[in-house]
Image (tube, rainbow, N blue to C red):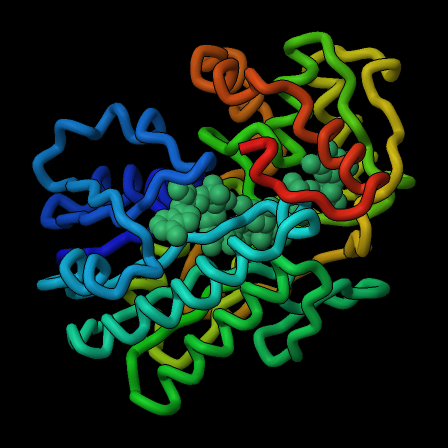
Length: 342
Ligand code: NAD
Ligand code: DAU
């Protein structure tokens, strides 16, 4: 099967490509990725010589290049996005361009190319903040609260519209907070782990009681490969981790494994519009036959080990230092052009 993957130099996309090449001998992958700050060829250094893999450096908002890259593909797995909530709060522009316009360009090309399955990789953030003990199901409405989540919700609507209007065989997946190897160290877990290795404080937003549902990236990409094979066009599948933790609890688990004193955690002002709780009901995916393989505790331990042994991967990415400190400063001042950091 020939698969066009978008955003394959990023965190989840690179884990997906590695998984597919390791498990499907007949797979051929074209990776369409422009290489933003979050895209890193180092993430796929180990498979760069594999003849079944080819990287096209191009923007998903460019219809001509997208059309060429998609030519002859059987399936599309669409990861490419601006993905960090704090950045979207400071500058929503790139989120609208890539996540919304880029998705439509891909859907249009997929229709011309008669793609057999189009997996649109989305997020639990589109459901908004979920009070009490409820878990979001695929039938829930969309109540996104950050510019990032709003751009992803818009892209979900466009993906759904392509299925209804043109019968494009689109499947939407909505996953919870991923963690694991190759995650850019501005996201909570890699920032926390690498700061602790550097003896720096981790900035805990607000009261630390916000809840996230943690999903090991290796389970996420296995689920996507499974859905690509077994999923039904027109359907939505939630992919959760069934590990709901308050941010304070997550910090404590990491501190215990790494033997870090409480003094390395600093309470800082909250992220504006910070969603209180995400939680997914993923029984539909389990009914389809998918089984999650990794326990959270073991995966967290493995992830910390990975960052310990891959300092040469993350050190250069932290060169400009203190992304979280930067966001804090900008939040205090009001919005500012993000390009200053890039
Ligand atoms: P990431 O930020 O690590 O990687 C995004 C990749 O997309 C990068 O390689 C980047 O270069 C590429 N890209 C960005 N704009 C592009 C453009 N215009 N043209 C071509 N390539 C472009 O993201 P991630 O964390 O791996 O997330 C991947 C997808 O999964 C996103 O769609 C995200 O919304 C979704 N998702 C992420 C999580 C999570 O916890 N990280 C959870 C659920 C869903
Ligand atoms: O839920 C899925 C989403 O998870 C994905 O769609 C997004 O692409 C991904 O970035 C992630 O969004 P979050 O905003 O939940 O993840 P982040 O890692 O930024 O933050 C996780 C939690 O930790 C959140 O409650 C905010 C908090 N946090 C984050 C950072 C970066 C802190 O307390 N301090 C920090 O420095």
